[in-house]
Image (cartoon, rainbow, N blue to C red; front, side, top):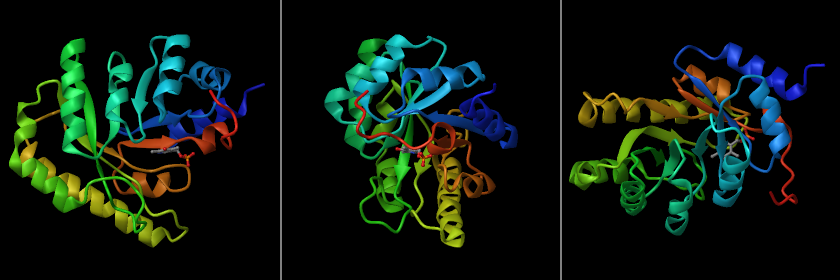
Length: 228
Ligand SMILES: *Cc1c(COP(=O)(O)O)cnc(C)c1O
């Protein structure tokens, strides 16, 4: 019997436009669930706790591509630097410099996305458009040779109002276009727009998302009592 996880992976990947990829968000889900997705062909997974991601990296097949999605504390960067393929949520210049430092030591160059605050909610992490423009304008980031700025990431307001959600995603898309034109015109690395989760990924795809981060729809509800 084909498992529900495999069926969801197939269903979602079939509806992705070319140029967009699925990040299967496996936080709080056990290795066996990841392996069900893996056996259905999924190779890209997202986690948002350092220890959990490191453990899964060590135990699971080495051709899995790991994306780090959550807020990253500087003292934990060193644990993921050896293997992480994309860090989605850069929300300060300081974090970028710390990643660069550790990546240099590890002999790697790490892809990073700038997280923008696009939601109405106050609590979400991320740069404002103005803060982000200012950071890029100042230009110190150009001396960081062990990171690639690979695009932007954002989370829409958690609401059923799809008009609101679409307008937030569109604002991120136009901000991406602005940065691409102003700073990354000739840089092929700057190409990703990470937006869309279980409840809003279809809207995000309509607005140009290249990376949808989907957990619940694939793996079911997370069991937060379970420490992995
Ligand atoms: C958990 C998480 C997701 C996945 O959320 P679902 O609603 O389960 O699809 C996506 N993005 C980030 C940053 C997350 O932390």
